[in-house]
Length: 174
Image (tube, rainbow, N blue to C red):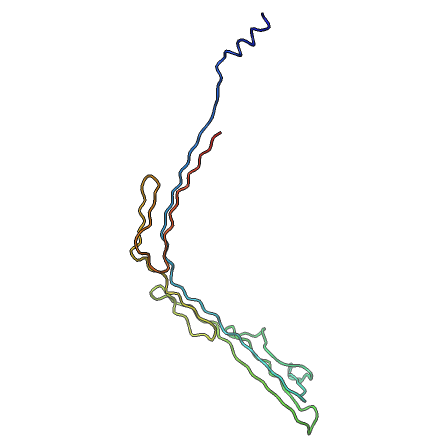
């Protein structure tokens, strides 16, 4: 009987369970309206030369160097535009036909600082692509938030605007 006594005490002892329960509610609501913007791309400097029955040369430190073609000197920039290294040509076979085509398109210089006006920066006219976005308007859009965590977006939101509302609930049991 003495051996059964500890077992009997365990059998009639109250059982304990311990658990922590944590609940978490996160609510968020926001209205966004796009800002006006402008973006531009500078045009590039391009140099092309082609021909037939011609011998090209360039002048380096006052001396002609035969067989070389000039181009853009990226080591010498003025307001972002490279200097041109001229290509001199001479007819290779005297008395024969020759052809030479050369073109250069100087790119845009680096523009000065841009000052915004009415929220939009007025950009200098460049030969590259320029895009201007007028931005959004709120319209009559509104958010209604209740203490229960329920959000409602209503009204007429204008172009470039929107409403986001969310409620997140998490329950953790340890």
